[in-house]
Length: 285
Image 1 (cartoon, one colour):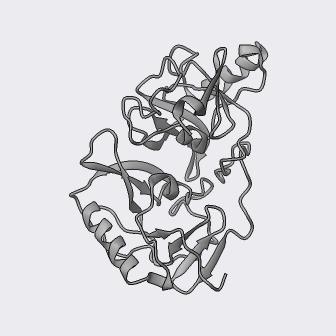
Image 2 (cartoon, helix red, strand yellow):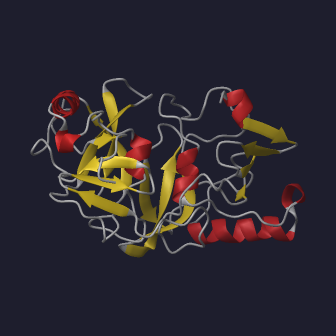
């Protein structure tokens, strides 16, 4: 789907056909940053006033904000040709609280697509959204559920691999194939080696994209931010993705599994771990 076809304008609203969500065309209708509680009250005011003809606006959850990011782009990290206006190169609030501390909530930075959490008493921007997405899974966080519920059970372990019935991918059961932190370049080599060795009897092993890694996050947990039923071993706090940062090609996106954040690291530095993914299934499934 081209970006022109992905986004459809309806006056000052924009429908994202990739997710089914409808966003305010203005990415800053409030005009200034707000505290988290103020952001929620601002959206409630939009609903009382039937902003753009509707009364079901809300603060997006972390996965919904994340779904807008295009990591091949920067300043802003949005798909080229997008129809949005007033996009601030700054942090945007989500509705998702941080599991380890309810005084904090998740936010996304539109300049490069990083996602972290911060004190609800700080001021960040608000980008209202409407609708429910059949294409996005719920975050697992305590905010009002928006998205598709997770399958139960989600995981199917088989030898050295684990099938994720939600994402449809197979992961290495050992979540530290370095072992230990390695550079991004070494991580890519390890993926090729695992593929050549047919880890778990499967091929197609690779470093996951950042969107695939983020899907592992359970926003209702921290240390690690992972479903407690997930049957992985050797879990580590940070992981490389295959996704190069659009901000700087010498950097790649990384997942902070301990907390659930998305950041970047210099490819040459041995700071992150390796967790591989394959699109193949075990023959026993």
